[in-house]
Length: 217
Length: 319
Image 1 (cartoon, helix red, strand yellow):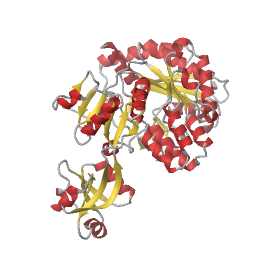
Image 2 (tube, chains in turn purple, green; image 1 turned 135 degrees about the vertical axis):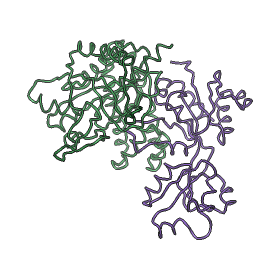
Image 3 (cartoon, chains in turn brown, yellow; image 1 turned 180 degrees about the vertical axis):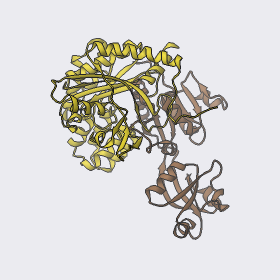
Image 4 (cartoon, one colour; image 1 turned 90 degrees about the horizontal axis):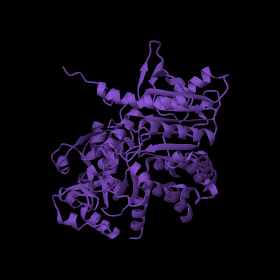
């Protein structure tokens, strides 16, 4: 079963540069990917590039054998509510880079979220991670109205749409610039190497070889 | 007029039905030749009866009947057949061999190959202990897939007791075990490592607990580990010894294989095909399930997802 070719889904965006460096370290050729901004499919080196949130989709369907994406994406797409014991993707390694925190933040000054909870019984929360946010407020026993936004989440509390946001922050600069402060930390996120469960069995030799090279880094 | 149907269900029209029939007829022939009698049970069961199965899947659909009893749509055929054997075959001489072609229902997120109503072709071999019964089930499984015309498939074979035994031997408390087993079932090795590190087990133990479940491949996997997993590995070796070569060459030994539902008590297996990102069938031993219905017998069975098999066959045609 040697000579198996792996297809690896890699995320464009914040994790892109470090992912390419990591692949370089494994001996995967990335020069063509680096040279091509528009091209998506690099079949001679087995790489495909996409949005980070699409990586689990391609890997779960087996269109890619392996993928790299943030834990934040995996948390948002994991479906514990309706799972029947199945699993979409395996999570093989914490790659350590792309470190950031999933936080609950509000405007600075007196905490508007706890005021809303005390007086109105519900916190309104804007987020790009509705499942993570809903699960977090459920788990902490607070009623929250989750409002999914696609663009800048920071805008929502400033305009009075919501009292709080749940979002990802690395340095906290964007939050600070918008007069937002972190009230609660929900989770920490780093880049993860994921695998299709079937590929993990059928291409075991190739995947283990790659993991072995990664361990040597 | 367009009239909708529930999410995760679909209509099968004649072109597709012809192809599905060709698959199920080929499989029915194999099951029949191997001595498995076809049975059918009601799609609706009493929740209190089906709920006797410890570790069974939680039913996704419930309704009330006219007396106020809670009825559920079955989520597999194994539990209903255990009920039938305890009820109707209590005094008959085992082993019992049954096969079925029937729909079951689960509350999954609908996707290709993952509907909420799905057709399974499967067998239950009741009253035949390991390793002989398991080897027979694997043989019938491979013959059925061969007869359907699938060429590239492999069968992953592991043991549901292996990892729990390993955790026990290293002194992991029972209340911590379930969370770790859930991480393994999800294939979350990062989460598994985090969970293990919290237990302060020592580097040697953590290394073992992380490496063993990632061992998968040919027979060499069975030579490595001794000690706490020896029983499970010896069981796998005994099964291999009973398989005919055409079946044995399909098998991938997988020390980390874990399968829902939770009633498996020994060997478990799954069918993989490169055309499909998910297993297209699977099964295992459930030696305690019949006992929960008051008629204790060792048993093994498997189910093939007919829709998934159809998808894999269609992909092979394009090669």
